[in-house]
Image 1 (spheres, helix red, strand yellow):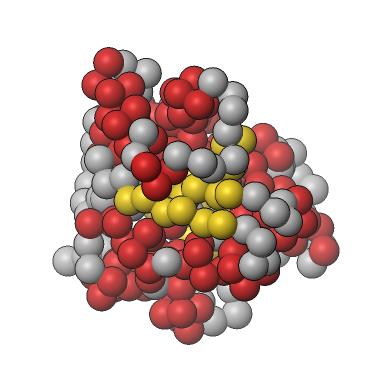
Image 2 (image 1 turned 90 degrees about the vertical axis):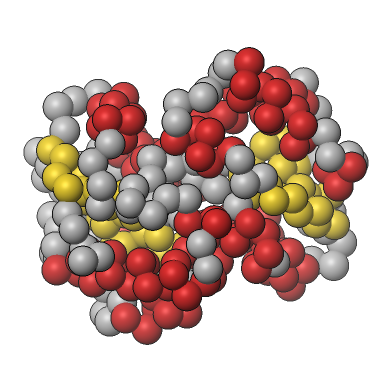
Length: 266
């Protein structure tokens, strides 16, 4: 089982930030990535729809003999987690929220935390609930930023349009007095530099990608499932082929990629 792949899925390219971090922290691991480009962004979909899409993708990744599956989507992690856990059978499964909460519990005991994410994630209040459960001394201010994920999917990064949208969101009163900001969408690390620039380094930006990668490393090490073979194979699947996805995957992995369109939802 050591050489079995790690499965990762997201609604689009956002989860590639997690896959990239895992590739760097665990260079010997094989990765299978599924991007549900047919239904992105998940943040605008109903909970029932997200649960349905997630269930089919999880079942697909199980057929690929993944030794661990990472739900690299905050929307799915927020509203579909209980359903996902039920169908994951014996396959270890990890969401992108709990590693962040553990990091906060260990490192931040008293602060003002801002959370930005999709409508589905923010409306679920999952971050507020989990953070309040670990400390009553942490203030949480959440803001839905629905334009960011589709903007990133369309390639608007570090441009006048993206800077304007980011500035408008981060200037909201809700986020006025925060000391830390959680990027509660795996797309957002792609605009992290713009966010840091906006705050002029006065706010600590919490990027989930490497926190998750470190958590995966510790989990596989503990269960003695770290791959000790240096030759790796990475496979990428999408529900609807897009040039932007292929371009992003090549950018992150710096290699010729194996990309296949799979119609799971028909």
